[in-house]
Image 1 (cartoon, rainbow, N blue to C red):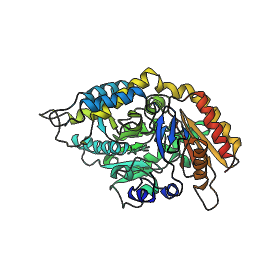
Image 2: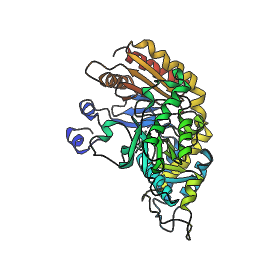
Image 3: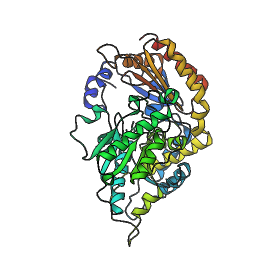
Image 4: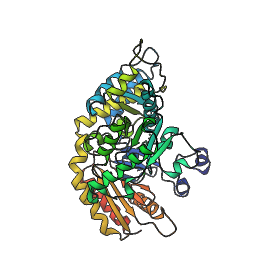
Length: 437
Ligand code: PMP
């Protein structure tokens, strides 16, 4: 399959593909906790695909639901008609989400969810006669996907620097890592408050009545798993409330059980005005994203003689029947198997195993965990940042373990069906690999 010609034809997404061209790692099948590569070797999935396959792979209930829906009705147009499936799915999702995030808009990806939420924020202020509120605030090191809005509020240089200035009127707050690495085990509530004051600084830098929304990942994933210091998210909420700014949580990674609750908003006890999700919504089976919107945001759009303002935003595949069928079967699987609480049940066991790796390599400078998320940060090799991270990925794959690396940080996020034995296997393989780099 991966002949030089076919590799040229497919422009692989993201970067780091020079290494792939040298050593193609091609996955051919997946079931439960395991992938199988094209040579038939079994590989334990330490990352739930890309933080998405939370129910594990090829779960029969989900597979059958997709097949059944494909045979029944492939697609339904939206204008003045539709399929009942997105209505049913939205009602189910509303039961999972924190109140008052009672309204759901469907997209096809995390990036689309983020762009949608940013547009809704600006339009919402306008609908309330505050059209001057167009500024958006993100964070340094944040990842919010690759749409024009998402990269603009994001803060990872490689995602921004090639594409010009992005959206106008965007600022970035400082990031947690600068103050308190692994803040949950070592950070103090004072760190959270101090860090959140950076939002106050940006608000004061501008006229507060020009700011539409603040967007943050409750736990940053793509920047290498960075946890918020205690009290940080609560303080952001307070500052947003004080100035009439909408708060958006990007829960594309943290949503659907990854942190031991349906959403991080519930575990951190801070409710945003909007929440963006994707990935775990369909357990990675079919592309789908969503934006959860609070009552007060939704109500502003439901004014006017026709019951709605003349706002146009939507995708051909918003609420696609196949995606809805996959999401409904995924939610059934989560509920029946108690998967949305699983990360909480396993959190201590997971943390013990993860922190037990510290002695495997003197170059480990930090280990972070929360729910079923783990990160091991290695000191970079002189003059070759990312080289040790890549070595770990390469050698772990050869041993039969899939990990994700961001530079020299190894990130882990197994499917939520993970058993203790898988966790033991994972850390045993990783320990052996870490000892060699
Ligand atoms: N937001 C966050 C927090 C993400 O982690 C990601 C993807 N890793 C995205 C948005 C973008 O999602 P997608 O790749 O589905 O567009």
